[in-house]
Image 1 (cartoon, helix red, strand yellow):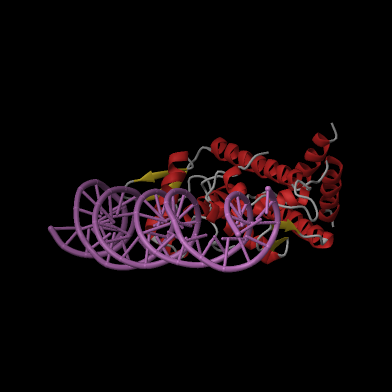
Image 2: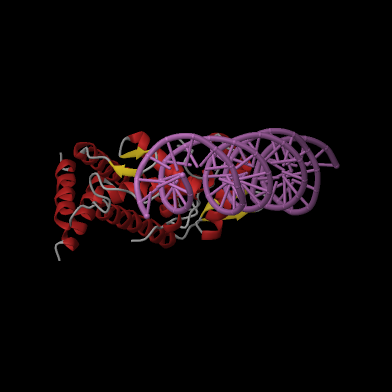
Length: 123
Length: 123
DNA sequence: ATTATTGTATTAAGCTCTTAATACAATAAT
DNA sequence: ATTATTGTATTAAGAGCTTAATACAATAAT
């Protein structure tokens, strides 16, 4: 799963989201060191300024700690990560249900679709 | 459910999406007449050019028919609408599952979460 | 016939995002 | 000590989105 950047919304927000995903999934583990801004920018094929912007936001949120001259590390606060992960999952679920409802699916229909998904996943 | 426009991605794409939702849910029904571009723009608190851009895309996709001087109507092709609706639903489901997976949830965990959702909806 | 309404097109301005090209200070590495 | 690497800041340019202000032709409404 390399960096996947679409042109339909700001790149820096996509970077924030994808880095968060990598933190939640453990690609970047608790307390581990991140590559330098420049390296991460190059990997993502993005300008260093843009990557910097994303990282600054993540630091503001506390998921990342910046060490002025020795790079950045992921927070060691496991609870914070777990909370953020749960929050994102809840948001995903709510957004999905809301959109299905706005599309006109009735409660029962949504339920049936969910059951179909679960059925399909057991195989 | 009035127009809900966030600043985190282009307005015209959000307009497209929300008009599609209204078509799928029947707020704008089969063959019915749409308000004029200017009226819709005003309702959405958006520039007429921006609304025009969204409507042009919907026409390109076939969901809307334009009558040069008497406004626009929703297509009468029920199948087309149904297909587009199904396609959007599938996209929502796939995006949800993919993101949950990228967040690090295992197949079993996702399944458990889905069951929780279903459980919560039966009440 | 006249007027109003329709979609459409154009031009200019302002805004955000992104890139590129630098530069700096602090400190890690040598 | 010297060099390399770190995050950070700045400036300029270009691209896309949005708004505002018009204008036009076709036709519906009066």
